[in-house]
Image 1 (cartoon, helix red, strand yellow):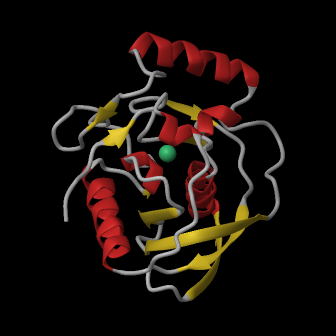
Image 2 (tube, protein in one colour; image 1 turned 90 degrees about the vertical axis):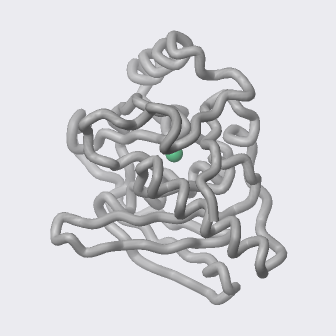
Image 3 (cartoon, protein in one colour; image 1 turned 180 degrees about the vertical axis):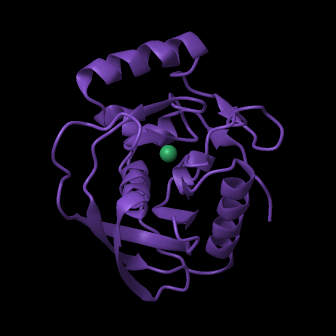
Length: 196
Ligand code: NI
């Protein structure tokens, strides 16, 4: 098991749809364990394989809700159905999102309030679950990663413009950038670990 470098926006692997997994076995197990290590070290609440440079449809999550109930898992070749889209004005704090591949930035984004996530577990057994609230947001964020889409691609135009400016200023947005959790100093500020 090991912590792997996290690719930063601009790397082609983050902007290309991932391939379905066809081989279930040791290599996949190792990938999932490395993803969990990397997510914990970052720290984050979710991580998709393309974020560590592997273009396959796998993501992991680990998040404790307001009642301290732990939600964790890994899914392979997922399908996501969206439930209700939240209504009303965007809550710039309550709906704020972040991504380990756009480190140290966060922007508010409207998401569906509930989803059904289906797919396979790393053993190849069918898996399906309903999620709402923050867990539903994590699933939508990670599922997007497997389609080659980052949450910043979905922002309202004003915020997208702001994000583009921030990214350019930081020197992100070009191939070959990555950071290593535990070594590089991204994501160390005092905000809650809600990155994915
Ligand atoms: Ni992300």
